[in-house]
Amino acid sequence: MDYTLTLTPTEQKGMEYITSDVDGWITNVATDRARIAILEIIEKLVVHCNANGIAMAVGQEAQVTQAYDLGVVLTVEDQNAAVTSSLPE
Image 1: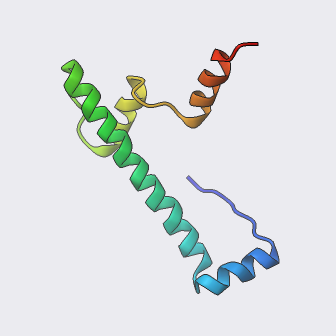
Image 2: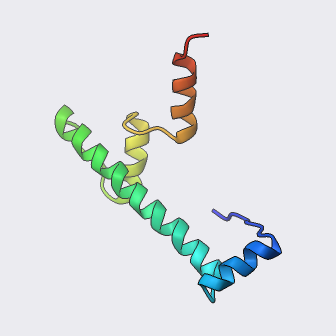
Protein backbone atom coordinates (compact mmCIF):
# COMPACT_ATOMS: atom_id res chain seq x y z
CA MET A 1 0.00 0.00 0.00
CA ASP A 2 1.32 3.44 -0.86
CA TYR A 3 0.81 6.59 1.18
CA THR A 4 1.64 10.15 0.27
CA LEU A 5 2.92 12.57 2.87
CA THR A 6 3.37 16.28 2.25
CA LEU A 7 5.74 18.28 4.41
CA THR A 8 5.91 22.04 4.57
CA PRO A 9 9.29 23.52 3.68
CA THR A 10 9.93 24.10 7.38
CA GLU A 11 9.01 20.51 8.25
CA GLN A 12 11.34 19.34 5.47
CA LYS A 13 14.18 21.38 6.97
CA GLY A 14 13.40 19.92 10.37
CA MET A 15 13.57 16.40 8.98
CA GLU A 16 16.83 17.17 7.17
CA TYR A 17 18.26 18.18 10.53
CA ILE A 18 17.76 14.63 11.87
CA THR A 19 18.32 12.51 8.75
CA SER A 20 19.91 12.61 5.32
CA ASP A 21 17.18 10.30 3.96
CA VAL A 22 13.78 11.74 4.90
CA ASP A 23 11.79 9.22 2.84
CA GLY A 24 13.77 6.30 4.24
CA TRP A 25 13.36 7.58 7.80
CA ILE A 26 9.59 7.95 7.45
CA THR A 27 9.29 4.53 5.80
CA ASN A 28 11.38 2.95 8.57
CA VAL A 29 9.22 4.48 11.32
CA ALA A 30 6.00 3.29 9.70
CA THR A 31 7.19 -0.22 8.88
CA ASP A 32 8.76 -0.74 12.30
CA ARG A 33 5.56 0.39 14.06
CA ALA A 34 3.58 -1.97 11.84
CA ARG A 35 6.00 -4.78 12.78
CA ILE A 36 5.38 -4.10 16.48
CA ALA A 37 1.61 -4.04 15.94
CA ILE A 38 1.77 -7.36 14.09
CA LEU A 39 3.60 -8.94 17.03
CA GLU A 40 1.01 -7.53 19.45
CA ILE A 41 -1.83 -8.90 17.33
CA ILE A 42 -0.23 -12.36 17.12
CA GLU A 43 0.34 -12.37 20.88
CA LYS A 44 -3.36 -11.68 21.46
CA LEU A 45 -4.28 -14.38 18.93
CA VAL A 46 -2.07 -16.97 20.67
CA VAL A 47 -3.71 -16.25 24.03
CA HIS A 48 -7.20 -16.41 22.51
CA CYS A 49 -6.58 -19.61 20.54
CA ASN A 50 -4.95 -21.38 23.50
CA ALA A 51 -7.79 -20.38 25.83
CA ASN A 52 -10.43 -21.56 23.37
CA GLY A 53 -8.81 -24.62 21.79
CA ILE A 54 -8.64 -23.02 18.35
CA ALA A 55 -5.99 -24.01 15.82
CA MET A 56 -3.92 -21.05 14.74
CA ALA A 57 -3.34 -20.17 11.14
CA VAL A 58 0.17 -20.59 9.77
CA GLY A 59 2.27 -17.53 8.92
CA GLN A 60 2.06 -13.95 10.09
CA GLU A 61 -0.26 -12.72 7.34
CA ALA A 62 -2.71 -15.55 7.99
CA GLN A 63 -2.48 -15.07 11.76
CA VAL A 64 -3.23 -11.34 11.56
CA THR A 65 -6.19 -12.07 9.28
CA GLN A 66 -7.40 -14.78 11.69
CA ALA A 67 -7.17 -12.37 14.64
CA TYR A 68 -9.41 -9.90 12.81
CA ASP A 69 -11.78 -12.62 11.59
CA LEU A 70 -12.22 -13.97 15.14
CA GLY A 71 -12.74 -10.50 16.58
CA VAL A 72 -9.64 -10.81 18.74
CA VAL A 73 -8.57 -7.39 17.49
CA LEU A 74 -10.42 -4.51 15.89
CA THR A 75 -9.24 -1.62 13.79
CA VAL A 76 -8.98 1.68 15.66
CA GLU A 77 -11.96 2.91 13.64
CA ASP A 78 -14.06 -0.06 14.83
CA GLN A 79 -12.81 0.39 18.41
CA ASN A 80 -13.85 4.05 18.34
CA ALA A 81 -17.26 3.17 16.89
CA ALA A 82 -17.82 0.59 19.64
CA VAL A 83 -16.95 3.12 22.34
CA THR A 84 -19.10 5.82 20.78
CA SER A 85 -22.10 3.51 20.44
CA SER A 86 -21.85 2.52 24.11
CA LEU A 87 -21.91 6.11 25.37
CA PRO A 88 -25.16 7.44 26.80
CA GLU A 89 -26.92 9.94 24.59
